[in-house]
Image (cartoon, rainbow, N blue to C red; front, side, top):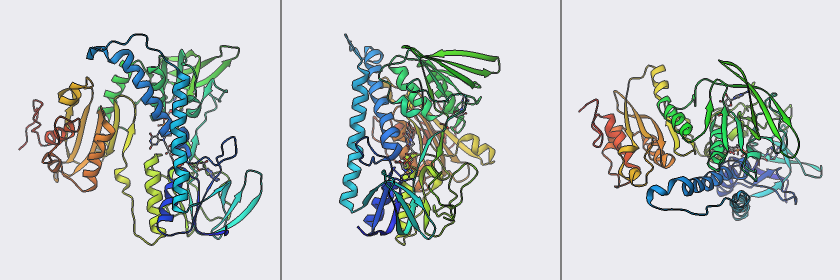
Length: 482
Ligand code: FAD
Ligand code: AMP
């Protein structure tokens, strides 16, 4: 193996591994360094997303939803279930199998594309050199034509709630409970808190979510966020807003308990749980990955400072994914990886940061792209809103899953679609149609004039587009435009 590469990627998460594959496809001699290792010393590929993030959480969301449906959702279809059982251990083991299938797939893709995998931790030195430190401490220095830093993020910890093995856990620990907690506390009503809360609530835990802010899902369109709060509370999630956790105490023994103190507008309170999940956000892994003379600047929160093409202040050194500005999402990391690989290969690729979809995989799903109504109001943009409830969608009713709505926002003058916000069945997949339309500069009328198959959930998007013009067919129109 030569110690010089056209490109060295540090980190094999969805940002890094995708960047490495794209570089190799473009004929660049590429290495990818990953420090995560299994107990038997093999590199673990796929980063947070595949190992302890997107995929395992969705595996458990899916399994828990099936259990919940079997328990409470089938009688209405005339299906009775007797003797329903729950084996949490088997559920967790299935999740582990899905993870290992996908992570193993990356190793194969590296091989097929000729990406050199280097086990160990990488550090950016000056002069586009990378220091590689192997697990046994051996150090070597590699020369790169270009470096892509993709070291990802880890959970934020807060002083009032230090982790206590198996009792007070972060999102990773919450994917590993082998029995259902009776009472489960969650600090933080963000995406991760709500998804993990849903998993364990569906499996039978009493879940209390403590959120310091007064506004629920502040970044989400508030019409959708209000519907989400109502629905999730109806499902049994006890979401308490304006509730700031100030201290936790764990009492040991065979049945450990955690006492959580929090303050809200009414004063101080204490709750006792048998497990507590701390889900208060994530922070970038940028400590120890940059030599002082690497020429790469961090902002005050530790994110790598980059331009719109993910170029750092050091020529030839790029940073992507959770360590740079923008939403901490796997698809954003991967698309940045592809953009950077293509720019290194001399192409003029760009990423449209205005159209990065966000999804919360609760049931119903919550999905959005573009501007919220609040953002348009604040910016003084005049717009038309078209809202269509799933309660009027034949397919949703047929499957007895008709909560929520599709909301489309379009510029009042040009009719260009500016935002789409959905809560409802299949929201993430319906949203993607709006993302494509917006990427092509679609007007609401373009969407309204498109033929949608019947009966589909997607027809709710069609009707929302018709509603922007004031002429949705399957609801009584309150506002009428031509
Ligand atoms: P990471 O995935 O964090 O990967 C970074 C990699 O770099 C890791 O493998 C790490 O070991 C390695 N590394 C770090 N330092 C070094 C070093 N010095 N040398 C070598 N290697 C190093 N996002 C979504 O889009 N959809 C979801 O549904 C979703 N669900 C999530 C659920 C949970 C519970 C969590 C925690 C996150 C979820 N996310 C989701 C977020 C998503 O996982 C991240 O945005 C994504 O993983 C970021 O990708 P990345 O490549 O930047 O970093
Ligand atoms: P996210 O960053 O989307 O994962 O959401 C994390 C949430 O945790 C944010 O909404 C924070 O307001 C919330 N949070 C942070 N610290 C505390 C705390 N001490 N008590 C309750 N909620 C908190």
